Length: 210
Image 1: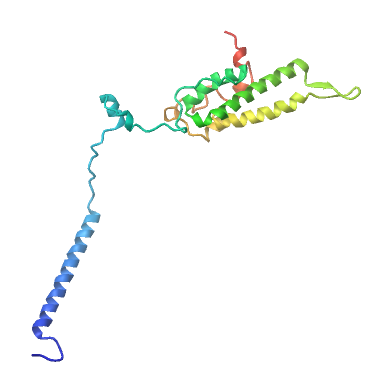
Image 2: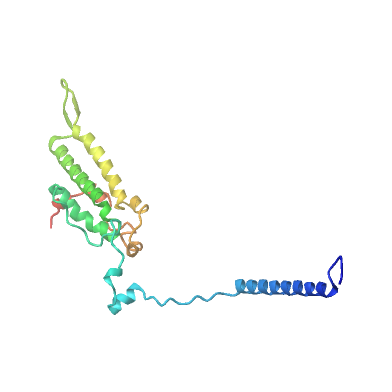
């Protein structure tokens, strides 16, 4: 019996155990390093795309994504009944363009109503100034600007801001996300003639002659 220390056989077994542990650790690290450098080949998903399901007629309606208020409208909705006659005409002219550009959702319908009413008011003010003139009699023999001139200026400024929100001006289209199919066509290139100039110069939609 050995006193005061381990036996030679015990020391040898301890060294062999330590060497074996170190060897296993080295092999494990080597495998990990090889796995990180080896290119991973991803398995192809067996899930079919929505396009393939549409072609096969295997689409399940209960699994389709639910529509939300932020989904782009594909068809122009009917003009609200409470709009004025001229505002409804503006709606029929603007709503299809906004749907084609992809800038109209259910959440934007109220803003489109304001835009149409604003454009209708702008037209009414122009007709008033055309009929009554830019000035009216003032105190004594003086004349002063017609009150409609100030209203016309503020109405046009508001109309321009709303037109920009829907991408209906060249600068406005730079700040909105158009529908993918329209990013390279004439709408995105500002050459379709549906900008703000259409509403401030030339005949109004109800004044057009065939």
